[in-house]
Image 1 (cartoon, rainbow, N blue to C red):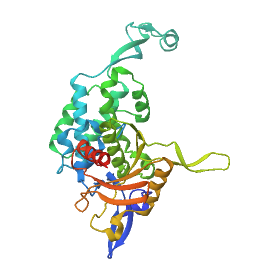
Image 2 (cartoon, rainbow, N blue to C red):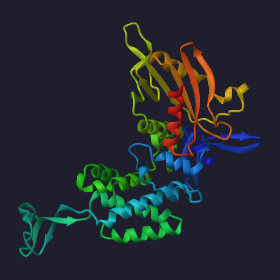
Image 3 (spheres, rainbow, N blue to C red):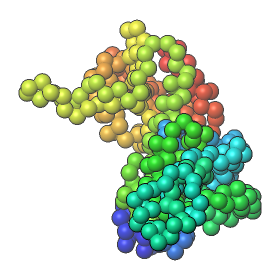
Length: 381
């Protein structure tokens, strides 16, 4: 309650009273949120829980979750933070098994021997009265590089926070292998340099992705700027949207499939410029047939036709605009399946030429199987 009232967490949490009791609502964000006192909240989706979340996270682009193993994805009793730490440690172990990547670094020193290049100006300045010493610059084959410093800093972070015996044991072993590497004193600069390290550090890609997530406390889609407490949060709408899109991208092999098409606008102004871009999640063109798919992470009630099954009217207006502007003959809303919504809700039409389908996708089943089922339904009619 103090976190919500004292900091800008309105994007993630809201405080209210429910039947006279304090209540915190987390909206549609999932992941990890830590209070200043160290209390950590694991926020999980209502549908599918932790296993479904970990499976869907693997399909987020430019993030390291694709390296999550099958066992980690199915973890139920292990806290979410420990799962992330275990995945990071597994990638770190893979990197260190091949040895630390080293680089030649130029080091300047004042030594009693001559090695490398003599720095004439430094020699005159430092050793005018010490002819027995030399101001030199030489290349050292060193492990003290930005990627290695970030790796050790992330391991130290995990060492202080890991609670499971397996993670504690493994992080101690990995830190021993990095004994000669110092901690990062400027993580922002080291992260910038690590991105420019070149192909020699290509095998560090996944582990540095984990390190960035653990050390930066940044959330997806910029919410981190509004949550000053340590957080690793994900908007479930985008997670589900990208998960479904990845399935269609893999399974559709005919026609033209476009993800996030944005060539049409809702309005045109007086001089012919488009206003308000329309961006359907998935557009599938097949000869004379165009199908628009839109994904929604909302809990429908398939047994409540009087309440329109929980479908929001604004979503239907949005989909209608997509259909008209992109010349679609069929519109499809995809929602996560739940115990009350296991079969399609059919029988809706916008008009004689524009049909609406409302289909479930079970996040607890293989993605390929669920997408293939949806494609079969579309092609059968």
